[in-house]
Amino acid sequence: MAAGLPSNPLKKIQLVRPAHVWYKHKDIEAAKRFAADFGFYETETIGKTTFFRGYGTEPFVLALEASDKPEFGGAAFVVESEEDLVYAHQSLPKECRATEVHELKDVPGGGKRVTFYDPVDGFPFHLVHGQTEVERRDPGFPVLKFNYPNEKNREPNKFQRFEKRPAPVHKLGHFGMCVTNFAKCYEFYSTYFNFHPSEVRILRMKRLLAERLTNSFQLVHNDEGVDVTVFFRLDRGKEFVDHHCFFFFEGPKMHVHHSSFETHDFDAQVLGHDWLRHQGYTNCWGVGRHVMGSQIFDYWFDPSNFILEHYVDGDLLDMNEPTHHNKAAPDNLHVWGPEVPPTFLQ
Image (cartoon, rainbow, N blue to C red; front, top):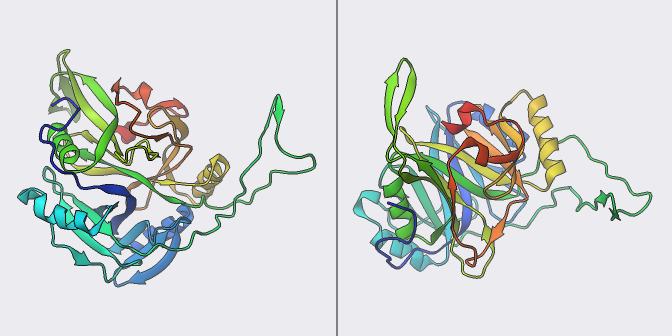
């Protein structure tokens, strides 16, 4: 199915913003150390789960749960009203196994939640409402004044000076999944939720036929265009929202691709890059600037090989901006920065 209007336009569950992501780790202490070095603020541990906030107002943006194996525990979105939770429980297809509305008793901020499971690949997806926001923290970075060749904005005898430190996380910006059936996932999420495509990547092939031949994949295709990746933003009318908050692409096996967190500015981001590098962590890709969304990116592997991203300077859109269609190719992923590593596209 080509990306566009949903074929069955129902009343939609109104999402407001991403709230948090949940990961399970076998080595929970290593995961917690990485979270601190990535720039999260630890809040509390309840049972097997440690919660981390950013310097924004969400009570937490990351949950790390001790488990016998690494696993993605799903992303959560804030919904507009408790009625949206009730409607989600009542209206989502039976294969989603949507829970009843229930109290969040063992997480910071409380509130209520409905959890459902992706109808194609079964990964969890959480909807929350009524969580108590927290006071915004000072990230400890100034709003800089830059001196350009013909425009000097910083006062004389004022300096730009920084400490070596992690990049402070502000909020969860987006997360992405590899799914096994793009068309079905697109139909589901664009029908039941107020997701709207900002960008759609098109692969010039009728279908992907993957055969394992001597540890590689052979692609058999023709020249018919098929949508293979979508970057969804939220339809909030005239309200400005991030270019994307959820993306997915089709592949042979479902997995979380990455979760992305906003930091303060470019200096904070590169300071964070150097901090993680000096702590011995493995960089996935970055620093560079994306085309779709425009943000400056920096991707890192955590100790369980999950990918987490710092980003700054992303685009804001409202519903006056149309959907853009782009040919799928590594060259349209970034404007500058290192070449796309093969591991990033898996």
